[in-house]
Length: 301
Image (cartoon, rainbow, N blue to C red):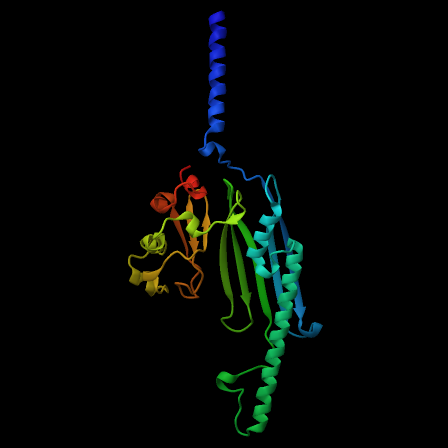
């Protein structure tokens, strides 16, 4: 009986030692998976008619803003400001989320009204010139203008793509149209935030010197594979350009598998193509990672 109790005590002491060693380990044991952060979402859709008349052209705006509303042991205000700035721009960075949305919408409506005033002034000038110069119609050819201004549309949203290990990755999507043919455009802006510091993670924080040119072939190879072609020339045939000089563009997302770059339309591809996304796993880029950073820890999990 005494031997049994002695063995149980030994096992108990061993387990306690294991727990103590694990808690004091500087490795992944302190690298918590759960960020313990809560998010909220504000959704709004607004329309503004020129001069407040529903018979006139209008602009529409739709916003869906996901932002952090609670985080233990962290400066929540600093994180919220980063989200607001990333979503709406620097002029709105110091505002609360709801205040920033209202201010952004007011600015959008104001700019639309200014564009409409400029357009009307230009149409008036064209009509005056037509009157002064008989036989010449400046509304013809490339000078065609309508008396009625175009309607605008904008959609602005963000989405959380990764939220673990003291890292938040999120993407801001903006699409807009100014009514004219071929005016519709979609752009993607990616952000990675270090919750330990409250500071955005940049390429220079992740990679060693010379990483950009070292990653060229990785990106090219990924694009060739994604598009199911065999050569650079094949990529050019389907609408890519300048791919031989492609380098990381700072527009990236991070997760526990690797890094994803988004190249917006017009960077290295025609506007008719979807914005290319290039995923590079950690086992490919590991030699380029700086040692001791939060990303190198993530890559070694």
